[in-house]
Image (cartoon, rainbow, N blue to C red; front, side, top):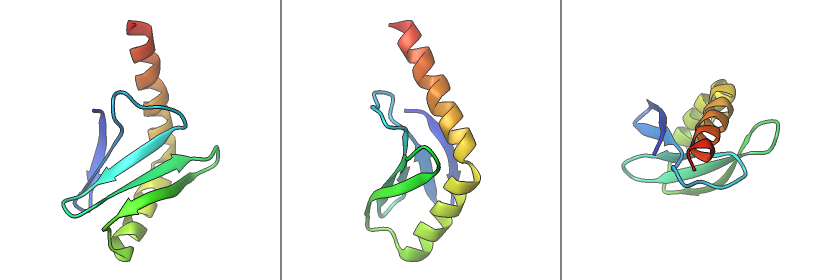
Length: 84
């Protein structure tokens, strides 16, 4: 389960057996969210029990690091595919 970073009490990650499209999971002690890459930016697809203020912080973190997220996804799943 590749962890990309931690911020604001949340872990930003994806799971090792993921599927397209590129997306990131954000997990905190009280809730979680999932953002999918639409080719231009990450879009909130689902969230559970995260306060609006925290969603704004998460959005900023994802927007500021979108290139890192996409690159890590592509790198990780290319390596996994090559191992099989």
